[in-house]
Length: 213
Ligand code: PCA
Image 1 (cartoon, rainbow, N blue to C red):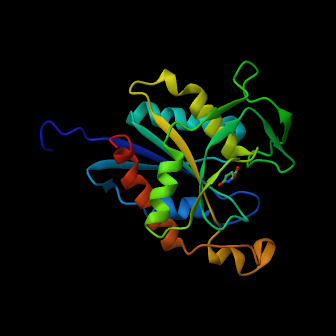
Image 2: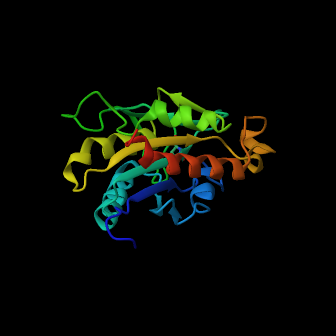
């Protein structure tokens, strides 16, 4: 490594399949990401779709890799663009169980935590850059109230406990065509896997640069 150049580490998380599906496009895309992008080390890991185990798992990876950036990635059925989440809210609320069969309705994630926490990555700049590169991307104002929002909230709520401080954010990705050909998801919007991978790669490339502009 050239001396004097800081080598950033970006931790990228994805989720296992859930809700009876055999594919999670976040997992499929994240496992295809390069291990290095423009001199940044990219560590890709999978997180269980579990309210109780998701953050525990992520925290161990943050302690192991000491990343400057944590980019969490999940599936959002019905969306047709990469959506960079602006905010996580302090609520678990979904009629569908997680992969541990845990159903949480209208319950606080942290009884003493803030109602909501903004992502600490530059959401609008990232989306603008992706759009300029011809990638379908939007800012999203809701990460839902299921495990993705839960993990994003927990990460942001605990970021100050780590050194270096990890800037953290969440990207929801659309379904991929294999999921929408038949079954429950038939007819929903999709994005080819290679476009999801290309979009995430561009986002990771731009991320450290967004702090220098
Ligand atoms: N999407 C779900 C959880 C796991 C995933 O990929 C969500 O949006 O909460």
